[in-house]
Length: 377
Image (cartoon, rainbow, N blue to C red):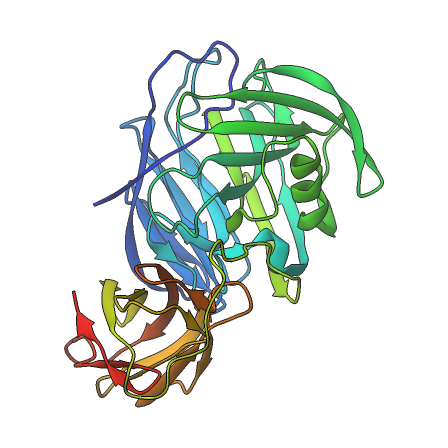
């Protein structure tokens, strides 16, 4: 079972981290009900919806539609000076190894040319909750474990709850005014932007919020955006709350900031490279992600690399990151991008991709770097 740490949006949070978890299901049809504590599914062939009832043993059910979800039952009761009882949400990207279909996340902030989103919420009265839009970032292209920086956009809050930390000022982003809070839940840093009144729907630039956090010194351009999420944190009640529409897109085209620390020599000719490849995978029903580490085990630096391999029958690549990948099935070549083409002797780099498969899952049988056969770890 996968587990994830949620940032607790509450004043007076006690030390210690609560745990979020979910189980992965198959693609959702419209009006699919999920009552499983950690149940999740996909919609639109692009996003993941998760029930994510981590803070209570009481029942919570969500109804998943083709464009979002609604809470149909929420029986848990949380302490309003502590943590919420759940975080039902829809997201783009990767959350504890569960990546949305075809995502290009994680992606380095400096490589993002645009990141946009639109969201429509449906609110109810008589409940205690916040409408939380989360943006997660980490210094590495992390797909599992706790990310180091959480950005929370509070579209609405009802009841005696407030964000982690304390108020550090106000700002204007996307033509709207926001109260800014900053703190930590003990596991990750949190910067929260609180709307002075409820926002029911909005189309905006996610990158504007990321840049504001960067300008506050919390992250740098070399960090990675790992996921964009929209949902609710209920403390008391919540039936009828809904995300009626969610869309997000992240486009690359920026210039990555990482530069080699060792001046490279010329690229070795074909057949002379000494290399080692580590091929790590996360596999679920009909889908997988692969993290590929390429190590230069020779005595000469490599300036520019191309890794060749053949995917087993039935496997197909749907998206990739940190490499220029040619081919989607069968023979594959993965070439360096601008910021990871230089490998000093003993150095390594990594890239990854997401794909689908049918039948039994196996790894590629071999790899070549610039035409030379690599060992595998």
